[in-house]
Structure formats: structure tokens, C-alpha cells
Amino acid sequence: MLLVARREVPRDVHLAHGLAERSLDERHPALPPFAQLLRARLQVNQLHIGQVTWLRQGVTPPPAPGLPTPEARPFTVPELPVAVRLEDLALERLIFDEAVFGMAAELTAGGSLVLEGGNLDANLDISRLDGPGGRLVAAVDYRREGKTIDLGITLTEPDDGIVANLLNIPERPPIAFSVTGAGPVADLTTEMTLDAGEIRALSGVATIAQAPEGFRIAADLQERTGLECRAVVPGHIQRGGSPSPYDRVLATRLGVRAAELIRDGKYGVTVGVSGQEIVDNPLDEVAGKTKFVPVDHQLVRSARNIGIVLGD
Image: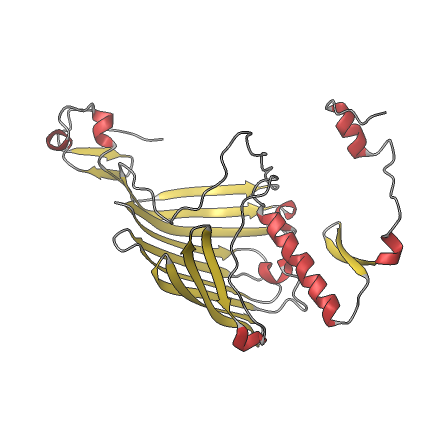
């Protein structure tokens, strides 16, 4: 709920626990009160949410027909007609059902946000309440003048944490990940590390550069891996829409399993999903064979119940 003081307050407009700091009459005397408010400052001292429960993945709608091809544009923070200052943001409990990304989790989050004059200053602190625990801390400071950004992200989790389970890392070791960097957005260099238990699994430099087709991302990991690393240009969104977090995690799990099979010298197999588990099947057991769907299968019944014609 947003409460606005009545017009006879000459200098200040009170917004719940916040304050719009600007003289409305002197700056825009001809505008109605609400229009003047949109050129003021919205300051909220505290915004607390008790509980949010996420039960399942959302459905990405297909792109509307006739939309133009996405164009690459330089990174900018929108300059709103009202400055926004959220001093204390808190979400006491964020509950993820197992169907969201394969395991149940309960988190708490806090932070702050300042968006003013095209500048952005945001801080986020997330901790896990259930299981072994874990913490993610992120800070982003973007300055419109000079188009520079200063960012820092750290993630720490003990044994059997969310990340180790999502990536299917053997023995589910403690995870420590960090990304730090500062400089122009169009040519940003960041340092990153990833520790899995006592093993430094990743250490290197990632460069993000503005290009006509989008952002070029190059990771200098050659010293660690001994392999040549090249820039990768994110392509256009596919017709199916943007991948959801579940899609991204699933792709990572499949890729990790495929790499493990190559490492173990096991070839001639396919990688797939059975329930929530990543499995592999010999090609000679699946290639050239047709798997029929029973006519009374639940998916078939559901399709018919919503009017889908299957040709029979």
C-alpha cells in the first residue's frame, strides 16, 4: 500500500515510511500533485516480506508473431523520472519446492537498492536456512558518467550444498566461488575463482567487451586448463523463448555427465534424464528402435481433454 499525504503539505510528500525530498511547488508549480511526485525522490526505509513460496517452474510464453529481430544495445540503467532509494530490503523466507530445480531449499535474503540519475547501487545478501547452510553476497555499483561498473560476487557453501548438488559434483564438496571486477562496462575485466573442497577447480580472468552483435565474453583459463580459450558471442533467443533456470541447470548437468564419460573412456552412449537423475544408455539399446506411447497414457488423455487432435 502506498500512502500519499494530502496536497496541503507544502514541502514534503510522505510515502509510507519514506520521504519524497523535493519542493513540489517551486520545481513544477503547474503540474498536478501526482505528476510532481514522479519528479521527486521515493525513499523507503524498510521493505520487509514475510514468506514467498516457489512451487514450480514458470512457463515461458512463445514470442509474439511479427516482433522484430532482437538488436544488441549497450548496457544502460534506465533513468526514471523518480529517484528510488530502498534502504533496507528483507525477505524473511524464500521456499523453493523440489520441482523448481531438483531439490528443496529455504533461503532468506536482504539488501538495498538505489536507482537515481541513471546510476545504480545494489547489494544482496542471501543465506540458506535449511540443510547445511551457505551464503551468496553480491554488490553492484554502476555509474552513468563514464559508464563504469564495480561488482563483487561471492558464494560459499559447506558439504552437500545447493550448487554441488545442481552440478552433480562427486562427493558434494564445499564450494567457494567469487567474481570481482571494476571498469568500463564496454571493456570489463573480472577475476574469478572456484574451489571445490581443497581443489582450485577454476582460476582465471573473464573479459566482457561490447560488440555490434552484443557482448563478447572471453575467459582466460588457458593457464589452468592448457586449452585455447576464445570469445563467445551469445546468439539470438531461440524460438522457444529464453531458457529457464531449470533449463540452464539441466544443460549443465548433462554436459558434466558427458564430460565424465569421456574422462572414463566410456563411449557409444547417450546422456539423458530419468526422473531427477542423469543417466546414460548404450546407443545399441536405443538407436533404431521405436518407443510407443500407450493410447491411454496420461499425456495422451490430457492432450485430448484440452482439445488437441492426435490424428486418430
